[in-house]
Length: 192
Image (cartoon, rainbow, N blue to C red; front, top):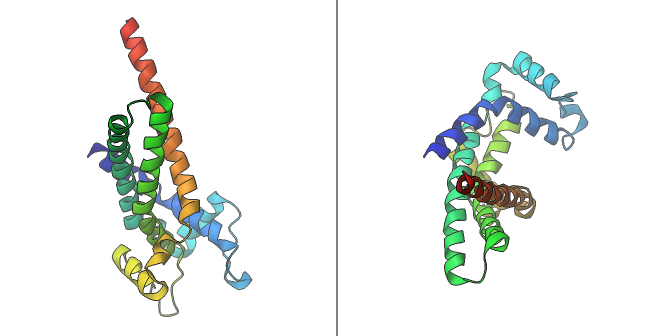
């Protein structure tokens, strides 16, 4: 539960940067007349606040925070579960190969579970309002439902391989490093 809270707080505080990043990445895909043409992240932050108000920094905060909490929950829990399961099923696999197998499986699970929230977050953060000031995407559940209804349920996992390569790669590196850190800590504790 501490991981859920920490992930939620950190992602909420990072929302202004996340909104800027999402918009800067999407800008090149927009027609020239609709581009925001931010020069850099600080320009994006300044213009968003000036042109749209401070609340725009937290557009998509709910799916951003939800996604971070889901990531923290699934990443850690599934890693430990798969590590125990693989160790029991394949007793000859130990050390880095065991950690790698558990980490890559945890990355697959966490990517699959969190990707729809990432899709909702990105759509909410990148949207422009209609002429009447109406937002197309109002909240996480409405965004997920509208995307699934208009584009099909599989749209929530479009680009899964790319997402997994980023997220799964991060997961593998994180857990391999964690296991080496644990090993070093046990060694130093035994020496003390």
